[in-house]
Length: 253
Image 1 (cartoon, rainbow, N blue to C red):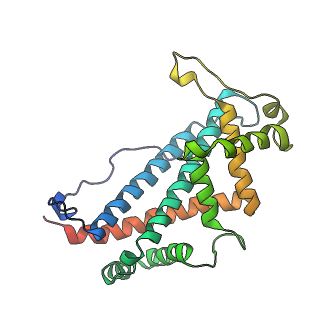
Image 2 (tube, helix red, strand yellow; image 1 turned 60 degrees about the horizontal axis):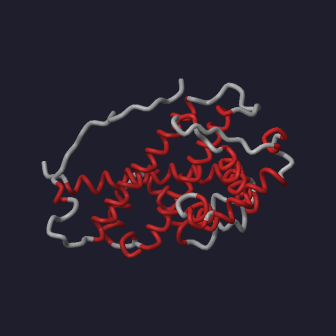
Image 3 (cartoon, one colour; image 1 turned 90 degrees about the horizontal axis):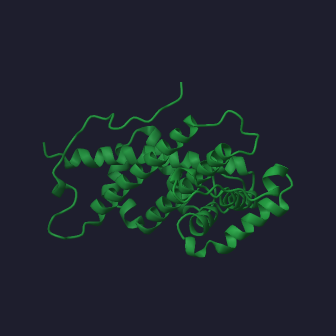
């Protein structure tokens, strides 16, 4: 049975707002860091829900050129690039806050984690701070891949022109492995008065080809994309473990 989307399944708990962030305007970097971790988890969960919804709508035949298939593949690419971008942002958060994660207080939280979560944290820490790449093919600049996806095709649209044009050329003019029918025409659907009927499939083709090129330059595409999704799952598990310890200390009731 496929997983669905269910809102608010967890039991509500509560604490005083000023136990998390002071009302007087004073900045506490440790508390701010944990507020960011909470937001990162929520963003990951949103992407998981998005992914579940898209998977539930998976077309029966993915081997034909159709608007339904184009929408499905386009949304899957969007989920992947957002997951990669979020993972990069998490890695940057750790990199910029090493004074916090190496502090005695934070390390006391790490010691309280389950053995599985401790192993996951050590893995993430190694990915961020070690020069030796793990979970990825030899000599792969893992963070560079995430940077390229995030900076060129995820948030920074103002600098996406050249990468997207290159991806467009890769799909339509170079990649002989692509279904000929999908390479012969730049597909789109447009109707100004009907939002749901609009999509520019050729833009999805361009971004998908660009990401594939970035990944192919580093190694096997399927393997690397799987590692990115896997690391995102690790991030969510560790965040929940850390926040559980943090919020236990903040309880007011």
